[in-house]
Amino acid sequence: MFKIDNLTVRVNDKNLIHNISLTVPKGQITAVIGESGSGKSTTVSAILGMLPPQAETTGAVYFNGKNIMAMSKKDRLLLRTKHIFTIFQDATNSFSPTQKMKQQLYMFTALRMGEEKAMFLPKMTAILKELNLTEDVLDCYPFELSGGMLQRCMLACALYNKPDILIADEPTSALDMLHQQHFITLLKNLHAQLGTTIILITHDLGVAVSLADTIVVMKNGEIVEKGQATEIFEQPKHPYTKRLVTNHF
Image 1: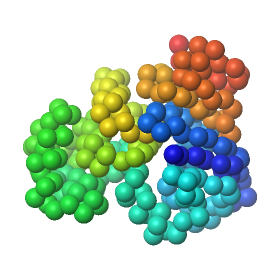
Image 2: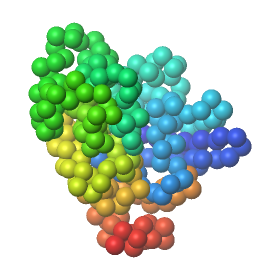
Image 3: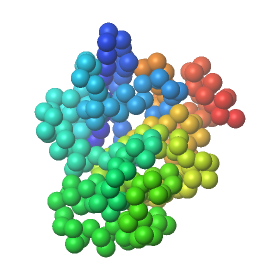
């Protein structure tokens, strides 16, 4: 369903991603882990077509057999709108501080799906309730909500849109331990409910092991190890992976 084939990303004569290949199984959670600068978020940007103009890319990213990298900007945007939803590291930056949540959640969900406003409110209210958020959230500005509440609002959008692929880019790094655990539980529930294919980007091995079926380890723009989550955690092979496991304890 989703495959990265020999992807290389070069910016200002520097290789940020070195010829990586990766298959993301349909309906599973694949975690991409590594420290800052390992190339995780650059890979996501390449997938989404959000690299800076000076970036040079080679290779291919396939979704349902079609090479995303060869698509026009219009077709790639259409694909993202219909099939992919992304939760970024700091949900605060995903929302405008000048608009209430009702309008912004509508734009992220019903508007992009071509649904009428009349359908949006009861549907979104029910989803927010599932996530332990009251309807009052809709009349708030983003700065009136906590980071954990904003991340749950992004999850609400994912539940509403029912994307084929959910990309979660460091979704817990801005949360305290309690909210991290709550968010992980909610993400598990979303996966169980919708069967969504999830690509989880994280530097936290504990988060990856608690969520993922498969773990991919990146270092300096390269994939150094990949395998089942329990295998990576219990029997790491690469020295870098061993260090990540050791530092986790």
